[in-house]
Amino acid sequence: MAAFAARPVAAQTPPAAPRAAPPAVTRFTPQTLQRLAQNLAKAPARPRVPPVAAAQALSYDDQRRLRFRGERALWADLGGAFKAELFPAVYLSADVVQLFEVYDGRAHPVVFAAEMFEAPDSLAGALGQVAGWSGYRLLHPVNSPDKFDEIGAFQGASYFRSLGRDQQYGLSARGLALKTGEAEEFPRFTSWWIERPAPGADHVVMHALLESDSVTGAYRFQVTPGEAQIFDIEATLYPRVAIDAAGVAPMSSMYLFGPVDGTNNDDFRTGVHDSDGLLIRTSDGGAIWRALANPRQLQMSRFETDKLAGFGLVQRDRDFEHYGDLEARYDKRPTLWVTPLDDWGAGAVQLLEIPTQIETDDNMAAFWRPKTPWAAGKPVTLRYRLSWCDEPPAGQLCPVVRTRIGKNASEGVWLYVVEFGGVGDLNGVDKVTTADVGAITQSTLQAGPESGSARVVVVFKPPATGVAELSIGLTRGGAPISETWRYRWSG
Image 1 (tube, helix red, strand yellow):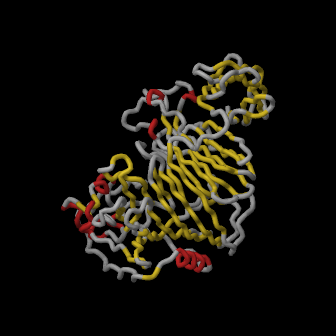
Image 2 (spheres, rainbow, N blue to C red):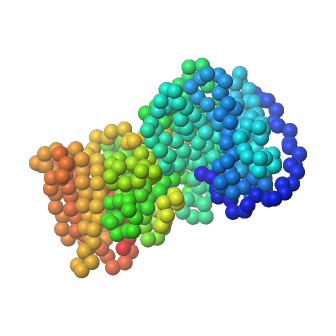
Image 3 (cartoon, helix red, strand yellow):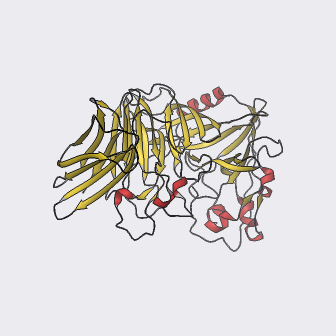
């Protein structure tokens, strides 16, 4: 989440500018933050606060040489199960934010000091000019009782990320997305209030102020670590203007290639992706599995419902041999699952897929877009849970476990091979296949290679131009027994 600086450190560092006095200690409650956000929404948006020039000039390698001293972490001297280490404001992509520690009902400013960091002498001058924080990370002994592991990082715009037990970082979440796929507006968390955990607490509570041109917001996070990391979030948003392109519970991931794309590449690996599908579940028991793709051109897909039970970008394939990368360990990347904790009404889960040729690009985005626009001046409250896990809670339907795609260029057709797990005996099972344009010229249902699995093979003749939406599902006695596989053909 850090940016790469392009300029070297100056040979002579100018003297540091006088520092502003730190904010005063004040009383704090969630209602305090809500009033602040509401009042800010009645005034013009405040400008961003970028890092000072000397900090922006640091190279990426120099930034990595600034190491926060573990003994200066919040709560390091309390002997509890949590710590918070802080990030200096030296990243081009991360604005300066205010940090407060909350205890005894009061918000105590966390004041930046250069001595909180280990740094070589050559960086002492630049470090002395750094004027604040860009974010923080939470630590907890989630993998071993005698070692504190990073369980979450909060830095840059409204980005944050987490991971479950025995996982490696992959996809990221955001507090809010606006006009994704258009001239996007990036809301940012500008202040954080981190509550000191009570003795023996199994969770941490943080509060954040969100600011943007169109909206402000008051956020409450409750982070509970375990096999999966659970973030319970409550957000109250105050639109300055009418908003018809909000992205709720947005997330960003990466998909370069995988089994869906065949082996037509020069990479030694057979798969490179943080997520391999978008899963959507509805309260009436339905489920859609949309296999991800690295498209030739940017594309947006919508999945409308008024019965949303959950959605997320999922890394379903956990077989190391399907990736072969000992360093990246894509088989250990987390799934991020969103569960609404109240009724979100009608709207759509939207998926943005952006073409890329490098694995460092987050080219996948998913979020919930409400059908009803948010009115200017009318608060909006949202409650939801984020689970950073291997797999979402088990559903009632047979899951899509594998997708393969091939092309017969001489006949101008595409072959789709989709496998479903947990089907069992195929007696009475029927396939349902559709294409909104083009034609499915052949389809077969057969037992899959693994016990209890089923395979559907579809031959598709595409249209001459445009795109086509394909779907495959299984029924028994006319009732769905599987997730509905969806895919977009785009030529």
